[in-house]
Image 1 (spheres, rainbow, N blue to C red):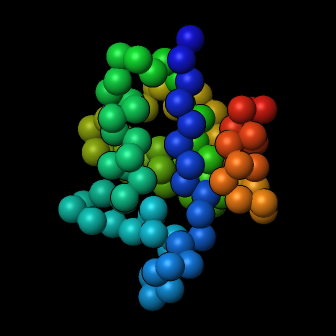
Image 2 (cartoon, rainbow, N blue to C red; image 1 turned 90 degrees about the horizontal axis):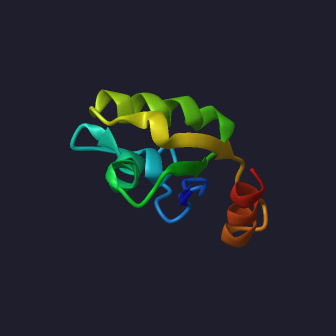
Length: 96
């Protein structure tokens, strides 16, 4: 069984003008994170996906992917982002 981890827990500080982190900004009718999620959902090499995201955005990710016509059954879990950065977030996903 192959798992993929999608890191979507950043704060988007490099784009301070947006009201939401950059991965949740909409472009072309979708959130940016949905564009990153799509190839994982469609891949024959990925069986399950763990998405690292703040709790308040988890349902938005799921709904946006569904509305984009993607089969979201591979999303197996969500994990919380770590205060320590990317490595901690990956660890949280692996522990989930």
